[in-house]
Image 1 (cartoon, rainbow, N blue to C red):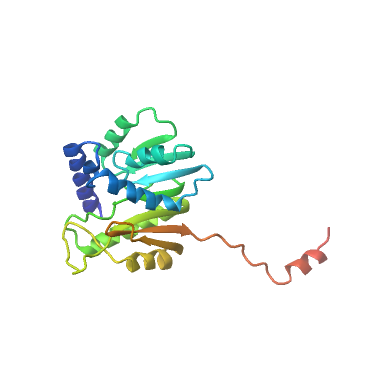
Image 2 (cartoon, rainbow, N blue to C red):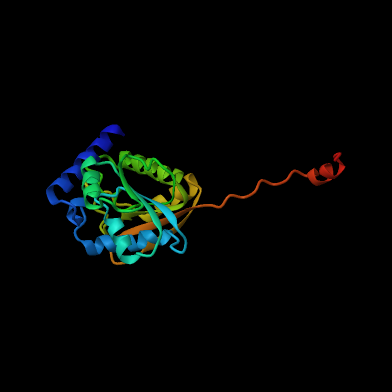
Length: 227
């Protein structure tokens, strides 16, 4: 896992150094597709009330820019996390003095928030065996759940029609990760697809806690107990 994370860190540090704080700098082709993904991911959030947000794999903070454009009135305590120190340096330089926003270097969320998002974080496997990459994704999804009070959202690329494999990229049918989130993480899952990109988004929510059942006879025992 340590070697895998080191490769991911090196890859994204290279993209931001080559292309700067732009969509290409975080390996997206353009801002249009980047923003379309944010629209889907943010459907996990309830903008009617203030909330805190972990942006895992935040890059240079494009999501913060999108929030300012589309949800300027929302009260969001934003925290961007990225494995690449070069990405975080670019984000801090871009958003110096931004109120209620911080950026930290990390390979996990590291702090609890109401919601978490991960956009494109699981797409580039850099030639690692699919099993190793899926183990990595499972670890990250488990961390996203552990650090989210309400829920989190992630996206994945869909397979090609001819099912051709790509060594550098990771593609998966939705069922693989829906089953993991429901069975292993015990969460509810909503699938979004068909929004113009060859990918899907999962909106994943913690199930509400249920009160422990009262023991039979406890009320009678309480009535008999001395005051």
